[in-house]
Length: 429
Image (cartoon, rainbow, N blue to C red):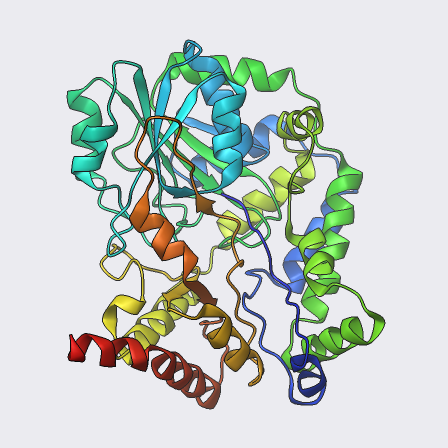
C-alpha cells in the first residue's frame, strides 16, 4: 500500500503557520546521512546478486525472499506466477490501496471486499464465509496504520478451504527480524513514507519455492529502475527533509498560499512512487521494473541500521495519545496487535471541523495521509458498510515523538472536544 498525501491546503492557516510553525502530519523516517549515502551510492558499482543475498540474510529469509521495485510490483509478479483463470476471485480486506485492486483486475480476476472490524481492522470471519464462492482462490489481508491483525482466524479459514493467503505488511514493518507470519506470502514496503524507508523497494517472503522461481525468472526480464531516477528522488526528498521543521514547513505553506500553488501537489510529487490515475500502459511499465543496484544498497543499509528505539518511542507516543481519548471508539484499530502507530487515525462525525481546528493551531491533519480506500463491491456482492463508515469520518493526526508536550496536549484536547457531542448523544440515548 502506498502513500497518498503529505502536504496540505492551508487556507487561513498558512499566515499563522509562517510565524508559529506547522507540525507536518508525517515525519520521514530517515536522516540526512541516509540520503547522503544514497546519493553517493549512485556513483558506485555494486554487485546486485551480493546485495540481494545480503538483504535476504538480514531478514533471515534464506531462500524464501525476493526484493522487488515495490509491493505493487511483487503482487503483480505473484499473481502472474499463479496461473489463475480469468474470473477467479480474490477476497480482499475492505480497506486497502486502490492499486492492489487495479492489479487484481488487470490479471482478469475479481476483487471481492470483506468488511473489517473497526476495533481490530481484521476481516470479520462470518463475512469471509459469506464472500466465499466456487471461484475464490486467494485471500489478501492488509495490516493497517502500523498495527497487525491476528492472522489465526484468517489463516485457518484459508487453509481449511484450500485458499492461498497473502498479507500486505506495507504499513506494518517492525524490523528485519519480524518478516512473515502464517501466510503463503508476506509483503513489506520501504517506500518514501514507510518505516525505515529506503525511498523505494519491497521485500516479499514467498513460501512456495516453485512460485518464487517463476517470479525471479519474470523479474529478471524487467528493465532496471534507472540510477538517475533514484538520484532525482533522493535530491527531492532531501529538499523535503530540509523544510520538515515546523518553522520551515510553515514558511513553505505560506509561500504556496501567497503564490497560489498547491502544497499537496508539490509534496505528493516527492513522496508518491506511482502517480494517481496513471494510464494503464504507463502504470504497467512503472510496475514492471527491477530495483536498481543503488536502491538495493540503500535498502541494505536501512535494514542494517534499523532504529528499533525510535520505533518504540513512536509506539509509546501513540499509546499515550490513545489513553488520552475520552471516547475509546474514536480510534480504529484500538484492539489490533503490536501497534507501532505508523499513522494515528481517529473517526469523528465532522472531520472537516477537526482538521480546521488543528490547523489553526499549527497541526497538519488530513483525511488523506494515506491513499488507502474502501474497495467497491462487484455486482451482486455486499458492500463493506463498516469500512465505508469508518473511512468517511477518518482524520489522520500528527502523533509522533517529536511533538512537544504542549502541542500534544492541545491536539488531545481538540479531539476530545470534537467527540464531546457524540459522547453526550450516547448518554442521552
